[in-house]
Length: 254
Image 1: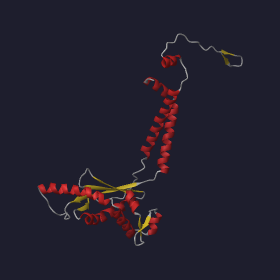
Image 2: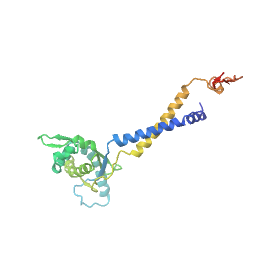
Image 3: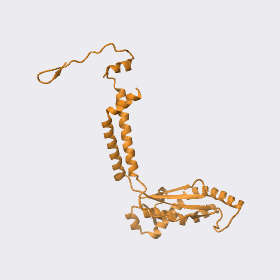
Image 4: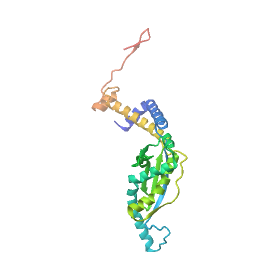
């Protein structure tokens, strides 16, 4: 089967392919709009310093040594900041500013600490947080994604508040400082309805083309004389035409 054959097969079923592509786009749009949760994202960058005294002035070779040490500490901090204990501390911070009833109305899952006091479930916060190194530097990016814009910003702020003390106790070295304050997101970060809709259209078009070509490939019927030549590699000596006559009732009869 040549490229020309494939193009001919696709063009012969182009209306069907367009129909399936449209259906795929509509299905993807409806799924993204009505089924997928609307999420909001915000972030904060924190810089790691090897010296606890941020006002310390360095010069010359000491600057490079400071940067190298800070980058090494940043790798360690990544591990420490993903520990469940820091999310427990953040969960406790929520209770200082929010009432239990308000959190429950917002469908924020709650847990109980060892003393029986409620707090935001640590696993909920951990699932919302993503921490990474910016270009393997001494800067860490804390990204938070939740269904509530203010909650996302709060988690970032609490992380900045809690992180220095937790890191200092865990590593006994260095310090962290927020480069800028996190902002409350004003527009959703996902779902990307436009992108998902276009993907649905493409999947529908490509899928329907694949089905059309597969059906044609598996079809063993001889439709034209050229099919005999192509399938069996034998020459065509003659063809018997199909003579049809029209009866009085308008029916064609061979």
